Image 1 (cartoon, helix red, strand yellow):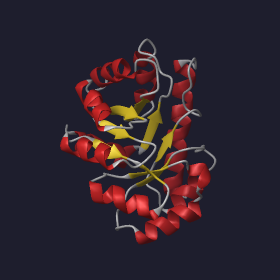
Image 2: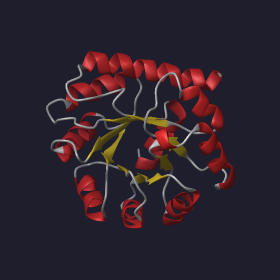
Image 3: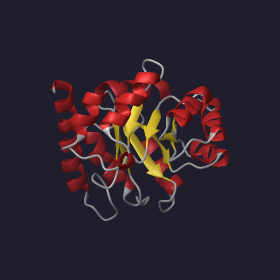
Image 4: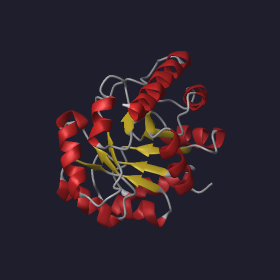
Length: 212
């Protein structure tokens, strides 16, 4: 499957990105299995984690049908490093046109962080496949609804920051297409069993938003 096919499949089945900040290469196999067993197929290792490229390489090798990549990507050189490690997903906390263009050039999926319509239109113009609304704690479902009203129809918007099983319905009702889930799903030292249970809870909560 191409990165785009993996992304589209994940969006259809479970559009939740597991943000694994602090993950170590030693933890990667067990945590990866726990997440995939719960239906997650979008796995992000932020580059400010210990030896992130090693974890990305391991996860990509272990889960060939998942879309694995990096978060906190700040420059084009980092995009190339992630690609060399086998990652095909690039997520940033901000919009850097060089990052987006390099990811698109390498046929990777790119989700830059935005907070304003100006940033959103700039990111889409550079070729972004979707937008990470970050930090979502600074926004609201009403903000997401207003932004989607002016963005091109079908624009993918995924809030990240402070997302829980209890607030997903409000965001989903506003029209967002998925979420990035961080410390409420994984934090360093958390057992794989606990990660799998929380991942299952988030998956169930997402499915609940579809019926809301």
